[in-house]
Image 1 (tube, helix red, strand yellow):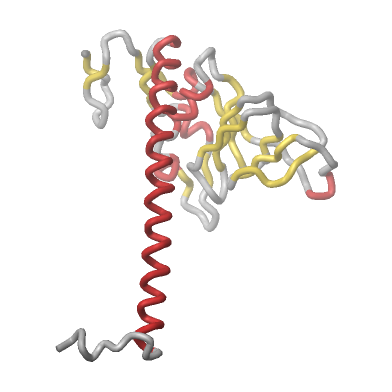
Image 2 (cartoon, rainbow, N blue to C red):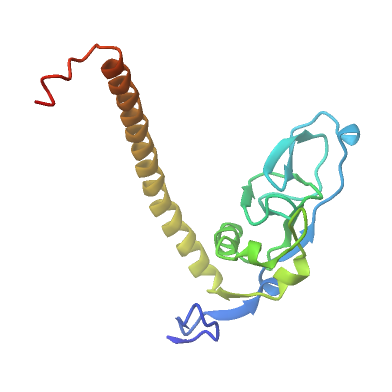
Amino acid sequence: MKPSGIEWLGDMPEHWEVMVIKRFSTLHRGHDLTDAERTDGTYPVVTSSGINGTHGSFMAFGPGVVTGRYGSTGKLFYIEDNFWPHNTSLYVSNFHGNNVRFVWYSLQTVDFAAHSAKAAVPGIDRNDIHVLPVVVPPKDEQATIVAFLESELAKLDTLTTEAQLAIDLLQERRTALISAAVTGQIDVRCVLQ
């Protein structure tokens, strides 16, 4: 291990390197597209809040990574196919040979909100993000990290779904219990004695 030079991170593996985001994954402002300009098509239009309809042409090749520039800042979207990044978003225009999924996961650790301009509608300037440091493993190790994350996150997603089903069931039981108690369906006099 060696010092990363990044206070919050501490030490990192000897063979990893620290670089600014611009050298790891270059962000670019999305492209204008009014409702009147939209045509029928299959290419997703990706705004600051995610996919918002489709269009007949694309401006970025998939797979891609997009984040909100205005409005919903900091949420990252992985887009598999060619797409139109809307002007309310920033998208990775150059992955510099890095694993696209690794870039997506890595950028999720960046606190975009902390670098959001304080205005009525919060916004991100890509130049503020480009100078932030990230830790970058070799390309082959990026693929291994992605495989590990996808395996482990799939397990967590399953647990989350199961937990949500249990919460929903408990909420139904709570509602049914209240309804039964206040409508006389349950005689609670003997329970409290």
